[in-house]
Image 1 (cartoon, rainbow, N blue to C red):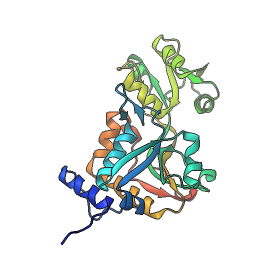
Image 2: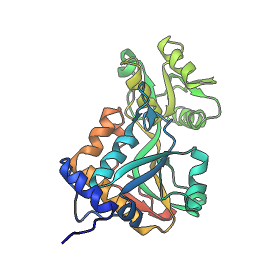
Image 3: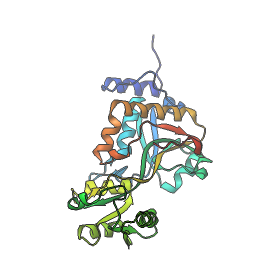
Image 4: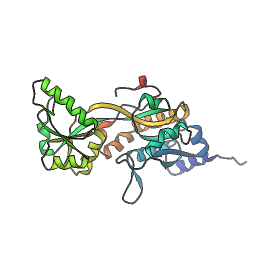
Length: 283
Protein backbone atom coordinates (compact mmCIF):
# COMPACT_ATOMS: atom_id res chain seq x y z
CA UNK A 1 0.00 0.00 0.00
CA UNK A 2 1.47 3.35 -1.02
CA UNK A 3 1.48 6.33 1.29
CA UNK A 4 1.23 9.76 -0.31
CA UNK A 5 3.44 12.43 1.24
CA UNK A 6 2.93 16.15 0.76
CA UNK A 7 5.81 18.58 0.25
CA UNK A 8 6.20 19.07 4.00
CA UNK A 9 6.42 15.32 4.55
CA UNK A 10 9.07 14.95 1.85
CA UNK A 11 11.04 17.83 3.33
CA UNK A 12 10.91 16.19 6.76
CA UNK A 13 12.15 12.86 5.38
CA UNK A 14 14.92 14.59 3.47
CA UNK A 15 16.02 16.38 6.62
CA UNK A 16 16.01 13.15 8.60
CA UNK A 17 18.05 11.32 5.95
CA UNK A 18 20.60 14.16 6.00
CA UNK A 19 21.08 13.80 9.74
CA UNK A 20 19.06 16.85 10.83
CA UNK A 21 16.85 16.26 13.85
CA UNK A 22 13.31 17.38 13.10
CA UNK A 23 11.07 17.60 16.14
CA UNK A 24 7.61 16.12 15.67
CA UNK A 25 6.39 18.49 18.38
CA UNK A 26 7.82 21.65 16.77
CA UNK A 27 4.83 23.71 15.61
CA UNK A 28 4.73 24.48 11.90
CA UNK A 29 2.65 27.10 10.16
CA UNK A 30 0.12 26.00 7.56
CA UNK A 31 2.26 27.58 4.84
CA UNK A 32 5.35 25.59 5.88
CA UNK A 33 3.36 22.36 6.11
CA UNK A 34 1.87 22.83 2.66
CA UNK A 35 4.93 24.13 0.78
CA UNK A 36 7.82 22.51 2.63
CA UNK A 37 9.55 25.90 2.52
CA UNK A 38 10.32 28.53 5.14
CA UNK A 39 9.98 31.78 3.19
CA UNK A 40 11.68 34.83 4.69
CA UNK A 41 11.71 38.39 3.32
CA UNK A 42 15.15 39.94 3.89
CA UNK A 43 17.24 42.73 2.37
CA UNK A 44 20.52 40.77 2.22
CA UNK A 45 22.41 44.07 2.49
CA UNK A 46 22.84 44.92 6.17
CA UNK A 47 26.01 43.31 7.51
CA UNK A 48 26.57 41.59 9.86
CA UNK A 49 22.93 40.51 9.96
CA UNK A 50 22.55 39.64 6.30
CA UNK A 51 24.73 40.16 3.26
CA UNK A 52 26.27 38.49 0.23
CA UNK A 53 29.86 37.38 0.87
CA UNK A 54 32.79 37.66 -1.55
CA UNK A 55 31.56 34.57 -3.37
CA UNK A 56 28.00 35.89 -3.64
CA UNK A 57 26.66 33.50 -1.00
CA UNK A 58 24.08 34.54 1.58
CA UNK A 59 25.71 35.08 4.96
CA UNK A 60 25.19 36.77 8.32
CA UNK A 61 23.47 36.36 11.66
CA UNK A 62 19.90 36.22 10.38
CA UNK A 63 20.81 34.02 7.42
CA UNK A 64 22.44 31.48 9.73
CA UNK A 65 19.63 31.54 12.29
CA UNK A 66 17.00 31.23 9.57
CA UNK A 67 18.84 28.22 8.20
CA UNK A 68 18.79 26.56 11.62
CA UNK A 69 15.07 27.30 12.05
CA UNK A 70 14.38 25.75 8.65
CA UNK A 71 16.16 22.58 9.75
CA UNK A 72 14.13 22.41 12.95
CA UNK A 73 10.84 22.59 11.08
CA UNK A 74 12.00 20.27 8.30
CA UNK A 75 11.73 22.88 5.57
CA UNK A 76 13.82 24.39 2.80
CA UNK A 77 14.90 27.98 3.50
CA UNK A 78 13.74 30.47 0.87
CA UNK A 79 15.12 33.98 1.42
CA UNK A 80 13.25 36.45 -0.75
CA UNK A 81 15.30 39.61 -1.24
CA UNK A 82 13.03 42.55 -0.44
CA UNK A 83 13.71 46.31 0.04
CA UNK A 84 13.31 47.29 3.68
CA UNK A 85 10.59 49.94 3.06
CA UNK A 86 8.47 47.30 1.30
CA UNK A 87 8.50 44.78 4.13
CA UNK A 88 5.74 45.92 6.47
CA UNK A 89 3.42 46.89 3.59
CA UNK A 90 4.17 43.48 2.04
CA UNK A 91 3.24 41.69 5.25
CA UNK A 92 0.07 43.73 5.60
CA UNK A 93 -0.86 42.92 1.98
CA UNK A 94 -0.24 39.19 2.47
CA UNK A 95 2.67 38.95 -0.01
CA UNK A 96 4.72 37.04 2.58
CA UNK A 97 4.40 35.88 6.20
CA UNK A 98 7.79 36.72 7.73
CA UNK A 99 10.14 39.68 7.32
CA UNK A 100 13.23 38.77 9.31
CA UNK A 101 15.16 41.95 9.99
CA UNK A 102 16.05 43.89 13.14
CA UNK A 103 12.81 45.84 13.57
CA UNK A 104 12.02 47.92 16.62
CA UNK A 105 8.39 47.79 17.69
CA UNK A 106 6.41 51.03 17.40
CA UNK A 107 2.69 51.72 17.84
CA UNK A 108 2.42 52.54 14.13
CA UNK A 109 4.06 49.29 13.04
CA UNK A 110 1.99 47.24 15.46
CA UNK A 111 -1.17 48.43 13.77
CA UNK A 112 -0.10 46.41 10.71
CA UNK A 113 2.18 43.59 11.94
CA UNK A 114 3.27 41.62 15.00
CA UNK A 115 6.82 40.89 16.11
CA UNK A 116 8.92 38.06 17.49
CA UNK A 117 11.80 39.58 19.47
CA UNK A 118 15.20 37.90 19.34
CA UNK A 119 17.79 40.61 20.04
CA UNK A 120 18.45 43.86 21.85
CA UNK A 121 20.44 46.87 20.78
CA UNK A 122 21.16 50.42 21.75
CA UNK A 123 23.97 52.92 21.46
CA UNK A 124 27.55 52.14 22.43
CA UNK A 125 30.94 53.83 22.47
CA UNK A 126 34.11 52.34 21.03
CA UNK A 127 37.72 53.36 21.42
CA UNK A 128 41.23 52.18 20.66
CA UNK A 129 42.60 49.33 22.83
CA UNK A 130 45.29 51.49 24.41
CA UNK A 131 42.66 53.94 25.71
CA UNK A 132 40.21 51.35 26.97
CA UNK A 133 41.33 51.49 30.62
CA UNK A 134 40.82 55.26 30.76
CA UNK A 135 37.04 54.77 30.44
CA UNK A 136 35.73 53.84 33.87
CA UNK A 137 33.09 54.60 36.47
CA UNK A 138 29.37 55.21 36.10
CA UNK A 139 29.96 58.06 33.64
CA UNK A 140 32.89 56.79 31.57
CA UNK A 141 32.60 59.41 28.81
CA UNK A 142 33.04 62.48 31.03
CA UNK A 143 35.97 64.59 29.89
CA UNK A 144 36.43 62.58 26.71
CA UNK A 145 36.46 63.68 23.06
CA UNK A 146 33.57 61.82 21.45
CA UNK A 147 32.68 61.66 17.75
CA UNK A 148 29.09 61.28 16.51
CA UNK A 149 27.22 61.32 13.20
CA UNK A 150 25.29 64.54 12.59
CA UNK A 151 21.63 64.31 13.54
CA UNK A 152 21.88 60.72 14.75
CA UNK A 153 20.56 59.29 18.01
CA UNK A 154 24.15 59.34 19.23
CA UNK A 155 24.39 63.08 18.55
CA UNK A 156 21.51 63.83 20.92
CA UNK A 157 22.52 61.15 23.42
CA UNK A 158 25.98 62.67 23.90
CA UNK A 159 24.36 66.03 24.73
CA UNK A 160 22.28 64.29 27.39
CA UNK A 161 25.26 62.38 28.79
CA UNK A 162 27.35 65.55 28.79
CA UNK A 163 24.79 67.27 31.00
CA UNK A 164 24.85 64.28 33.36
CA UNK A 165 28.62 64.74 33.61
CA UNK A 166 28.46 68.42 34.51
CA UNK A 167 25.53 67.86 36.89
CA UNK A 168 27.73 65.31 38.69
CA UNK A 169 30.59 67.80 38.92
CA UNK A 170 32.69 66.07 36.26
CA UNK A 171 34.22 67.42 33.07
CA UNK A 172 31.88 67.83 30.11
CA UNK A 173 32.05 65.65 27.00
CA UNK A 174 33.84 67.30 24.07
CA UNK A 175 31.56 66.37 21.16
CA UNK A 176 32.71 66.36 17.53
CA UNK A 177 30.17 65.94 14.72
CA UNK A 178 31.01 64.04 11.52
CA UNK A 179 29.14 63.29 8.31
CA UNK A 180 29.79 59.54 8.21
CA UNK A 181 30.62 56.60 10.45
CA UNK A 182 33.79 55.95 8.45
CA UNK A 183 35.01 59.47 9.20
CA UNK A 184 34.49 58.90 12.92
CA UNK A 185 36.39 55.61 12.83
CA UNK A 186 39.33 57.36 11.18
CA UNK A 187 39.15 60.13 13.79
CA UNK A 188 39.51 57.55 16.58
CA UNK A 189 42.38 55.78 14.84
CA UNK A 190 44.21 59.09 14.25
CA UNK A 191 43.64 60.27 17.87
CA UNK A 192 41.47 63.23 16.90
CA UNK A 193 38.75 61.88 19.22
CA UNK A 194 38.92 59.41 22.10
CA UNK A 195 35.80 57.45 21.19
CA UNK A 196 32.95 57.15 18.73
CA UNK A 197 29.26 56.75 19.61
CA UNK A 198 27.07 54.75 17.26
CA UNK A 199 24.41 52.07 17.04
CA UNK A 200 25.66 49.25 19.25
CA UNK A 201 25.39 46.55 16.62
CA UNK A 202 27.29 48.65 14.08
CA UNK A 203 29.92 49.40 16.73
CA UNK A 204 30.42 45.70 17.39
CA UNK A 205 30.70 44.98 13.69
CA UNK A 206 33.38 47.64 13.31
CA UNK A 207 35.18 46.02 16.25
CA UNK A 208 35.29 42.72 14.36
CA UNK A 209 36.19 44.16 10.94
CA UNK A 210 38.85 46.56 12.30
CA UNK A 211 40.98 43.59 13.39
CA UNK A 212 41.31 44.82 16.94
CA UNK A 213 41.88 48.51 16.23
CA UNK A 214 38.56 49.39 17.89
CA UNK A 215 37.07 48.01 21.12
CA UNK A 216 33.46 48.50 22.22
CA UNK A 217 32.93 49.75 25.77
CA UNK A 218 30.64 47.53 27.88
CA UNK A 219 27.98 50.15 28.67
CA UNK A 220 24.87 50.13 26.47
CA UNK A 221 22.65 53.21 26.28
CA UNK A 222 18.98 53.45 25.25
CA UNK A 223 18.63 49.67 25.05
CA UNK A 224 15.58 48.38 23.14
CA UNK A 225 14.46 44.94 21.87
CA UNK A 226 14.59 44.09 18.17
CA UNK A 227 12.65 41.45 16.28
CA UNK A 228 11.35 40.02 13.05
CA UNK A 229 7.98 41.17 11.74
CA UNK A 230 5.21 38.69 10.98
CA UNK A 231 1.75 39.07 9.51
CA UNK A 232 -0.78 40.47 11.99
CA UNK A 233 -2.68 37.84 13.98
CA UNK A 234 -0.90 34.96 12.23
CA UNK A 235 -0.74 32.71 15.30
CA UNK A 236 0.59 29.69 13.42
CA UNK A 237 3.64 31.55 12.13
CA UNK A 238 4.22 33.29 15.46
CA UNK A 239 4.06 30.04 17.45
CA UNK A 240 6.43 28.34 14.99
CA UNK A 241 9.05 31.08 15.11
CA UNK A 242 8.95 31.51 18.89
CA UNK A 243 9.26 27.74 19.44
CA UNK A 244 12.06 27.28 16.91
CA UNK A 245 14.04 30.23 18.24
CA UNK A 246 13.53 28.99 21.80
CA UNK A 247 15.21 25.74 20.74
CA UNK A 248 18.16 27.68 19.28
CA UNK A 249 18.44 29.61 22.53
CA UNK A 250 18.33 26.38 24.53
CA UNK A 251 20.84 24.36 22.50
CA UNK A 252 23.45 27.15 22.35
CA UNK A 253 23.18 27.88 18.62
CA UNK A 254 21.74 31.36 19.17
CA UNK A 255 24.61 32.54 21.36
CA UNK A 256 27.23 30.87 19.17
CA UNK A 257 25.98 32.67 16.04
CA UNK A 258 25.93 36.04 17.81
CA UNK A 259 29.42 35.48 19.22
CA UNK A 260 30.74 34.54 15.77
CA UNK A 261 29.84 38.01 14.50
CA UNK A 262 30.86 39.91 17.63
CA UNK A 263 27.26 40.45 18.73
CA UNK A 264 27.16 38.32 21.88
CA UNK A 265 26.46 41.32 24.10
CA UNK A 266 23.11 41.84 22.40
CA UNK A 267 21.55 38.50 23.29
CA UNK A 268 18.22 38.45 25.12
CA UNK A 269 17.09 35.83 27.62
CA UNK A 270 14.44 34.24 25.43
CA UNK A 271 12.47 34.98 22.25
CA UNK A 272 8.94 36.29 22.70
CA UNK A 273 5.88 37.47 20.83
CA UNK A 274 4.82 41.12 20.74
CA UNK A 275 1.37 42.10 19.51
CA UNK A 276 1.12 45.40 21.42
CA UNK A 277 3.52 47.85 23.04
CA UNK A 278 2.69 46.67 26.56
CA UNK A 279 4.15 43.25 25.70
CA UNK A 280 7.69 44.60 25.26
CA UNK A 281 10.21 43.50 27.88
CA UNK A 282 13.20 45.29 29.33
CA UNK A 283 15.43 42.29 28.48
